[in-house]
Structures are given as structure tokens and as C-alpha cells.
Length: 291
Length: 240
Ligand SMILES: Nc1ncnc2c1ncn2[C@@H]1O[C@H](COP(=O)(O)OP(=O)(O)OP(=O)(O)O)[C@@H](O)[C@H]1O
Ligand SMILES: [Mg+2]
Image (cartoon, rainbow over all chains, first blue to last red; front, top):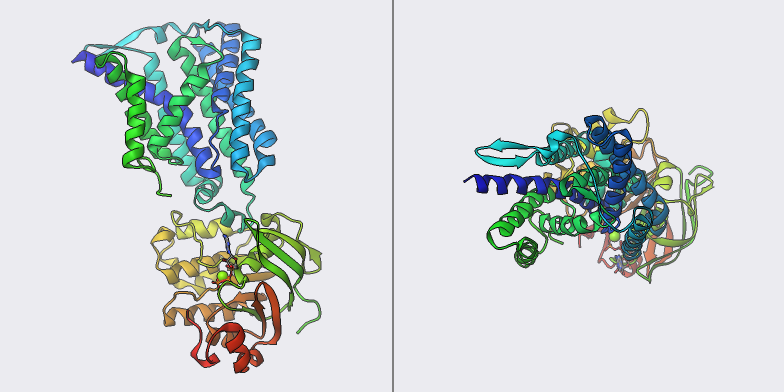
């Protein structure tokens, strides 16, 4: 029983981490029809700079942790904004070139991070509480998972509020339906493009810092690994659907954890099988629009 | 007709996916009243409007109230004072009526009272998702989005397409009222509506302007109507 609960809760926690990455992918794809392969680079850069600031302040204090989360978010947002302005915008409406340029940036960024921080993982420390566990019906749940869940929940709520109740949110929702008509109402839809990159990059940057606490280290490849699962989650949820991404994040991660425990560590394989199954039965994903 | 036309189009050409859909279009739109754009299906009426707005690749010169606008991005052209009501309405179906209108507002004091008075049906449906409205109601949302600003020109593409006769009358009435304050370039297949609303008309064929002049004079010319619009007589209208 306690094993079941532990797998379930850690699954939800891992799903929370996936969502931090997948939310941005989903928003960007929904509005711009660009699969952003550079998203992992935003995450990794956020993780590295978060780590740098934390270790200067004193890694095992809450202050250092809070500062690293903020820095991760800011760095992710800045990196993503620059990427959009310098690389994506000049290729306006040329989707294939836009995707290729994000692939190139992802590869270059990994090389750059290895040049700066080396290719070995750097182990990090955290506030003592995060290394402890909390007992839930007998299951000893590492506290890091609570932080992941809290962050993803906060992100989901903020995104929903932002999309529902702000003018920019309205422009994004309208743009997902029909970008040309948004411009035909006199609105510069490219500003919304930059904004979704900034928001997605910020979530990824925060995700990077939290991912480094989840794995216990930072490395130049942190983002690449997570990005694969985030893409799978985004596709299963339905490309462009934020709610779909949230649901799929949790489903996929829980499935993955169960398979890892009960089916001899086949979690990754099962995820790919699930992806294939969803694509066969519902090609547009769980909540995707048919098209 | 007052002196300077509000819109002048010279040698407009446009392509979609490499195919030329507007061959060589030149015309001007007077600064008052309604000017109709006529022509058979597929002659390039919609494409001409889209080219003027920069929604498709185009070359040639377009002048709005004396200023060239053909080099500008679509949102800048619209900000210069063009309201666009596209063919097939293109409302944002998941947004509410209120959100569709709010999105369109470009000026400090949008003409909300004017629009509410023109379309009382929409007032009680403000919180309804636009995608759940009837075709006629969606057309009103689309018109309202263009009428909520003080524009220099409206471009309205087949506003009565697929609507029941009573709604056609309402839409025509709304356009007549709007035309008191803003010139309108109107693509319309329903010739009775054209006869009722338009002062001038431009006839397109094969991506070119083949005839311009007084709207009623054109519609009275049975041979011309038959040849260029593909209908028997003006009186039967064209609903296809
Ligand atoms: N997206 C597109 N791709 C390829 N060809 C197109 C596209 N849109 C329009 N065309 C072609 O451009 C030509 C002009 O089309 P357009 O829609 O401008 O005509 P129209 O006069 O508005 O017709 P209708 O009266 O049916 O609305 C047509 O031959 C059409 O097939
Ligand atoms: Mg048309």
C-alpha cells in the first residue's frame, strides 16, 4: 500500500516537472506552430545560473534556494526572449526554418554549457528540509516532490488567470484560433509571440532549477533529457492544448513510475508505447483539435 | 462625389502559394457611400481585399487618404483606419462576444453605444462564446468588430452569404446606417442588396477590373450582368 502511494505521489511530482517544461512548448506551438527544440537550453541555462547564485549565497539556505528559483525564471525568460527576437522573428511564418534554427541553437547551447561548466554533472546541495521525507500513509515521500507540485500548480493557476483575464491572454487565445484575423484587427501578433516565448522560457528556467534538485545535479544535458519527455507529453496531451499538457504530464509520469517499479525499469519504453497508442487512437492527442 | 478618393489601388497583383490570383487591379473608392465589388465566383474579389490589407503577398500601389500603405504590415494598415469584415466572418469562436469586440477596440473611446444600438441581439449575448452563435449573429459580431472604431474605410466581404432573407435585410440595414459615417468597399453577390446600397460598382473578371461605373446602371445592363456576373437577370439576384 505505501509503495503504491509512494509511486503515485512521486509520479505526480515528476509530472509536475514535465508540466513546467511542456506548458511553454504547448503555448508556443499553439500560437506559433513552432516546435521549440531550444526549450531544453532555456531550462539548462536557468539551472546553471540558479546553481551559481545559490552557491554564492550558501546553497543549503532557503534564501539561496529562493534566489536560484527567481534567477532561473528570469534567465529562462531573457534567453527565450532573445531567441525569439533574434532567431525566430526574422523567419516569420517560415515554420520549418524556425524549427531548424531552434535545433541548431539547442546543439550549440549544449556545447557552450560544456565549455563553461564541463561535461561532468555538478552535484548541488539544497535546504536540509528538501533532502528529508514526509510520511504519507506510511510512504516516505522526498520533500522535493512537494516543491515540484507547488511550483507546477502555481504555474498552471497563473497561466489560466493570465489567459482568461488579461488583454495579452485574450490576444494569445485569439491567435491560437486565427492569427491572421488578429493582425487584421490591427494587433501586432508578433508581440504575443515574444511574450509566449518569455513565459515559456521562464517556466522552463524555474523547471531547470527544480529539475536539478530532483536529480541532485546540474549538467549540460539536463534540458535535453527532460525535453524529450516534455515533447511526448505535449503530443499526447494534444499539441497546443495547455490543459491537455497538464493532464498528460501527470498521466505519463505516473505510468512511467509504475512501469519502472513493477515492470523492471521499463518506464521510458512504456512512455513511448503510450505515445504510439495515443497517436494511433487519437492522432490529435487527448485534447487536441482535429486538424 | 467628393474630390479625393479614400482608397486608390494601382496595378495591384497578388499571389497565393506561387499562383497569381490578382492579375492587375486598379480602381478607386470615393470618400463617401458604398462601392460594390462584383464578379463571378473565383475572380479574385476576396483576394483583392486581402491583398490591400497585406494578408497575402502583393505588389502595386495602394493609397489610403493620400498615404501609401502598400509597404506596411497588416496591423499597421488597419491602424491607419481600415475596418475589415472578412468572408465567412472569422469570429474567434472560443472567445465570448464581449472579448471579440474588446479585441477589436483600437481607440480610447470605442463606439460601444453605436454598436449596441445597431445589434441589440448581441447585447444580451455578451458572455456567450462566439462559436455558439447562429450564422447571422456571428456576422453581426464580425460587423461590430469593424464598426466599433472610427475608421476611414470599411472593407466588407459577402456579409449576407448564407443568411436567411430576414437577416440579409438586417445586415443591409446596418451597412446602410454605417455608410452614413464611413465609406464602404463591399463585396456582395446578392444583387438586390447591391442595388439597394451601392452607388458605384467595380466588376472583376479573371483577376482584372473589367468595368466600373454607376451601380444601378451596371445592374440594369442585362447583357453585362449575364456575361460578367453569370446570372440571368438582375431581378433574380444571385444566391449561389
Ligand atoms: N488559399 C488559396 N490557395 C490557392 N488558391 C486560392 C486560395 N485562395 C483563393 N485561391 C484562388 O484564387 C482565386 C480567387 O479567389 P477569391 O477567393 O479571391 O475569389 P472570389 O472572387 O472572392 O470568389 P467567391 O465569390 O467564391 O468568394 C480562385 O481561383 C481561387 O481558387
Ligand atoms: Mg470571396
